[in-house]
Length: 136
Image 1 (cartoon, one colour):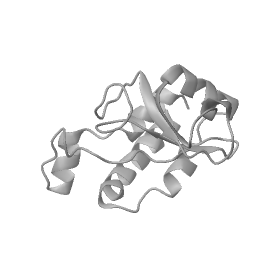
Image 2 (cartoon, rainbow, N blue to C red):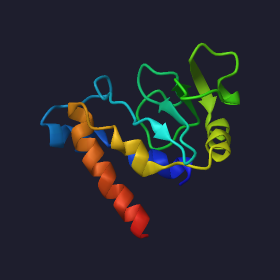
Image 3 (cartoon, rainbow, N blue to C red):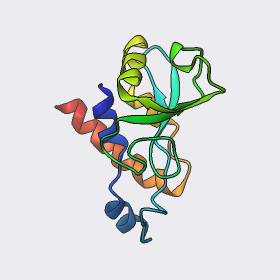
Image 4 (cartoon, helix red, strand yellow):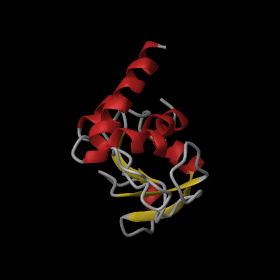
């Protein structure tokens, strides 16, 4: 799975999320974490984008040019000279990192992602998207 497909899986439009949660979500309250990205070799890392995070654009989106990354499960060159979190990392660098680790394992990425009210709904929606992607 490519990083662009990953973002399409983890992105939930705010109107859709508002409707499902019965709660008005604005650009300022539209905050949820993307699931931990797990690669095929077991490497995992947090990749986040949105308001208040070091990403471009600085809101939830289906397309980014740079994202905030952090807390890798093991050392990787992408985290050199960081204190565990690195902001405004170009998507091209993230794609190279994913390739070094054998690609994205979407199913493992979602196994641990159903602990809060946003992820309970969004996790189920994403599972449906994964199933459709796997069937395609």
